[in-house]
Image (cartoon, rainbow, N blue to C red; front, side):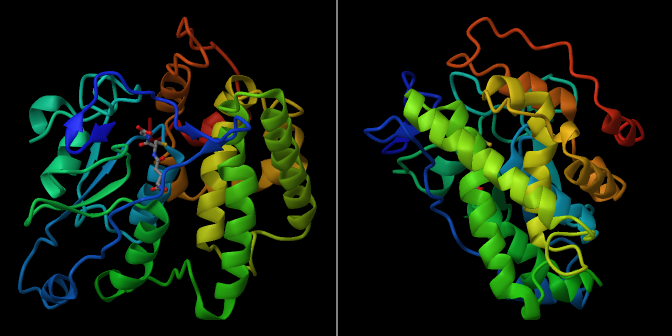
Length: 320
Ligand SMILES: N[C@@H](CCC(=O)N[C@@H](CS)C(=O)NCC(=O)O)C(=O)O
């Protein structure tokens, strides 16, 4: 991590804990949006480029949220993406030769933390992905995936004019409620289980994870999507956890009561989403497995499991 703009060679790749051994995630610090004059300039074809770029890791569920939205809204040409290697190095996220990552020679920076110090020379904190980057001013616009989803959905709407609305006005209260419950107990719940440093904290998180999955399994009875009958940001935020569950969380994070494959409704829902190209093309099982199983605190020898074989891998073939 960075302390007053200086990279610390001795840093804990695992995030903070409270006194009971519970995992605590850092809050995001850059919370701006794409300048509206740039959006208008692109809309009126005064300029070709939005001057914005996205830095991601394919292992990362939060970064993957933003990639899915970028694809759904047809922003792939307008917003270029750079992909780090799946393993955190001693210098944090870096570019390199891992298949499917952006080679370091193609980048102006070698490490993601350099984006943080370019934006704030005194930055203290973890250098996380995703990063929405202003390539004209050389600054981070936003490093919070929940915001970036809304920026793509709403602030860039004049450019994409998509029929898809991930945060429709009539459903916003409901969406916020689902997001909150699913984030605390499932998206972050799996991390709380995996990184718990006491039996009690682990069991508390484990219960939250499976109570939420059980609830979603019954909620999805007769429904195509989680809120209303339309795809919303809730589906994207749930998907990124479901798709990592069986290949990684189930064994590495010890959330092992059952797999998603053992839940009929959740499995059918996962299959349904994976048939939408934006979901399948932004899912890389090789990055997910290589990345999670490289976490030395949880898997000291770095062995990447050969399995599992999952039926939904067939949806990814076209893209990998
Ligand atoms: N609030 C952020 C969280 C991002 C986050 O925690 N990213 C992880 C990867 S999944 C990261 O970059 N970790 C690096 C670190 O903790 O040093 C978001 O949702 O955008």
